[in-house]
Length: 472
Ligand code: F6P
Image (cartoon, rainbow, N blue to C red; front, side, top):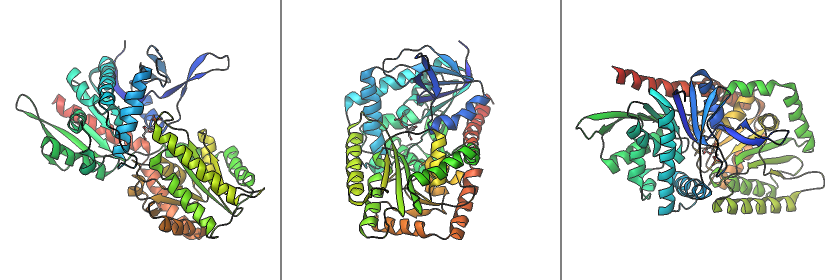
């Protein structure tokens, strides 16, 4: 088997299993942000990608796709429940998002997490070249760096954490807090979205392991009495801004944006929310604010419409099932009270859409509502900004997103403050074109400069530095 100089290890492979026209199983590039983010990096190097093929029990041999060697890791039905739905999305996800939902601590889930992390580490150890790079992605695989270091001490290991890292006071709840921190410290470079996440992680390292930290460096004592250094610092992720700009110039997509407005009955303002259906996204808070604006008579059906795309996510996890029920009840109530034969208050879509349709929606939207209660970054905010080359449109952005650190010219809100959110939505609806333009221009500059290519380059440059100093 050929060895790769750069191996990405992520929970999912960058492809989805589909059926082609003749009904035969085939692979298609998946639409997610992580895949788009790494796509460019991978195509430039001799790369491999280790990940789950997305269906329990599916056995597939490694194969090549679009210039990348893909190495599927198998998960059984039970492992999917205990490792993915259980420990990753029932324990870590809520804990790391400031316990918006209650984390569940189950020893069986932890055991599965350890077992599956080891499988990923072994697969990466098999495929990486002597002295190569392994770049581990996200919270599902926090133990992989340490496991891999034991198997392959010659490789340079990076880990990027796409979601928040919580304050020590919350992190301390985790019964396996020591093992997880040790797992992450197996990496040479540990990347976070925000400076605050890197700071929270370093504090946990100091409190739990008593290791010294100085700015971004962490000193890790070795069994032989020496010490090695790891770095923990922010690398805010971004989007492939250019590809969004190009789509936004496509005449067919522009025509679709006009058509969307017509099909909604030509409201004077379209508000838009685009999220995975997840309790971290603040969809309920947004609906509450919009419902109250209708109750108060500050907005009128027909004049203002809210389009809410809530793409299906983690349907096997109970908290997500409950959230879906609550949201659909709320949407039904608001629409029942306010819809007319011609107009709807909320056009709710529990579906995923291709990127072309998303860009048309962004173009059509006068106001984008990103009201997350906690979010590692939020790429939707950056996508909305990228497509508005005419500098029209208003971004209402929760201060609890990573994106708020960069997009400081957005209308920043605290989504827990419903009254404040209502006033800000009104301000967005009424904002004069000159102010829209001033704010949008400054946000676009930021998104276009710090695109995903730069993110990848910065991270890989730090891995290179480690390799150079190891060689010396
Ligand atoms: O933002 C975190 C994340 O895990 C992404 O990496 C991923 O694209 C998204 O959430 C969807 O998650 P899942 O793989 O659980 O469907």
